[in-house]
Image (cartoon, rainbow, N blue to C red; front, side, top):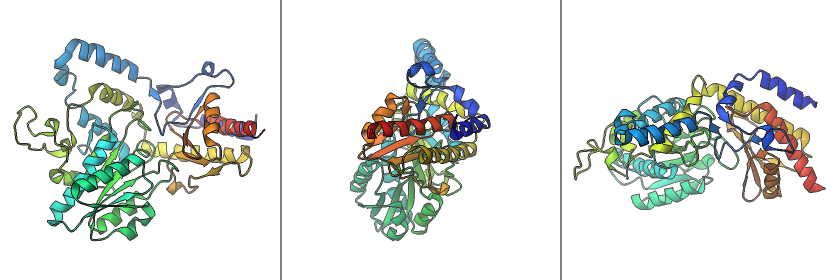
Length: 412
């Protein structure tokens, strides 16, 4: 047993979150003939399946839909699911109840938030002088596409800038700023408090994409005065493929939030079937059409794994896992073979490690064949996501060791 293997065992024995692992459906030794149990390090793309979800979905399909049918809108709580589940997510992103509504995709919610942000500024200032939207130049492509559409719709100019450039790019023309809390390629954590403060000082509205931070680290939406935020639920929140996203609207902005997608579900009287639209009060303004009940209630079951778990404990373990992985990579992988793109400083790191590697695509295919599942981002990035609820230190050590062996095989 190597020194790092022994240390991994000690760290796992002392891990206060080790017990949550059994609440997930994970690989067993029999799934991988050549190695021990598989290592799943792709929770930053799709979280593992919580064990409670299949039974809950079966109940939703067979009893709630199959037996109760239309009665389930009231008797099974279908109608209130978007805000009820939003309140389950709220503590994980540092928000009080009543500010998050679940539904639609991340892309749709980015559109609602960004157009809504421009409209908020217009209503506050009473003029059209703020005609520029700043967008994170390193963002996930869809956010950029949506920002471009929102700019055209609102008559704004779209200006891509890096997060570091935002303070210097803000001006009296800035209406809204769309930023990612964690960079999806590198795992870099951006400074939400200071950037939000800078946006506010310029009189603009801050919109944050939390896809790669919610469920992995404290966000502090209320504490830092974030205006609007969106996020997916299928990564660190483990809601399942395509599970509904969410929209956060700060409480004091809700009565002025003007969604560009008004629907019957966000009407003050949804069953009044009126010709004129009158928005509901509160975060319900973020609803649009009929909720996607099957995936929404699967998400609700998935969120039960957070019972008794603090996001601060998750963050502590996340940093320990990524530190240990980087240490193991340094010890096992020949120098110069990979380069970490993820910052070493804890205050700048999310919950993934991105390694640059010349033949990254082939390397990741071989890793997956050996049971170490991460992912590849063009052209040369290996991404490894660390979900503290089910990833252990033994997993980390093995992943680094298999990576080194794989690179050695390719070199030979």
